[in-house]
Length: 235
Image 1 (spheres, rainbow, N blue to C red):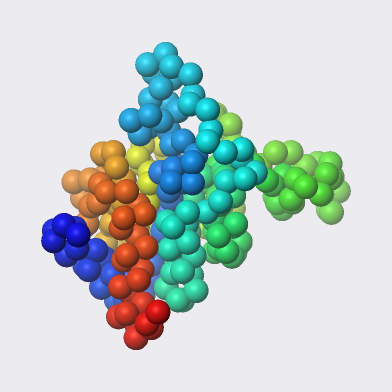
Image 2: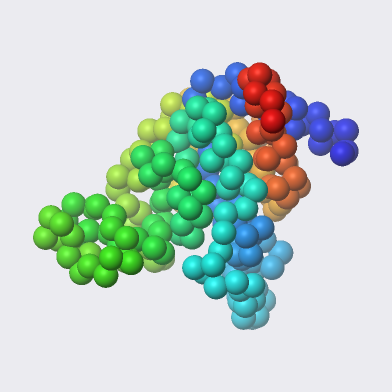
């Protein structure tokens, strides 16, 4: 391994170990290693659209997509008791599929496998085939389209946990879509260290405490493995 990268991974592991309130924020980049496209990467959906190109066909159908080593590393942080909250811009359901507890997750843009109640905001599995919530409210898709407001509860929880964080790790997001991209700003204002793992540049690169442009699978699983050693847990 590159010695510079190795040192940075070691630093990240130590910061995870020291953190009292670790919050992770994910974008489409965390799911590219599962075969899903990102948005603003070199071959992303919006990048291709700007060039007049169609979206690349998916390698596997949506329902067959599985969590990758990045998702599983975040789920491992949960098992270790280090993850306080996870904020995601993704709609692909892979965090829940990886074992993340629903109460530790805010899905700012919804979830393709869930319906949301227009009355109480409760999320219900689409597979149940219901048109009405248990409260009697109408169920609609939970995925947020452009121009629609983000789910109020998820947004409120995201701001709250970002402000409480002392270590805020961005994984696979270009951080250009607001209000989701406001979260790292809130974390910094509260004194948190900001770590960014993204192959492309972000507007927050200059203020990040630690920056990785390598693939997520080459960084996050290794950092979590070293964290386990620091915690005295050996595989």
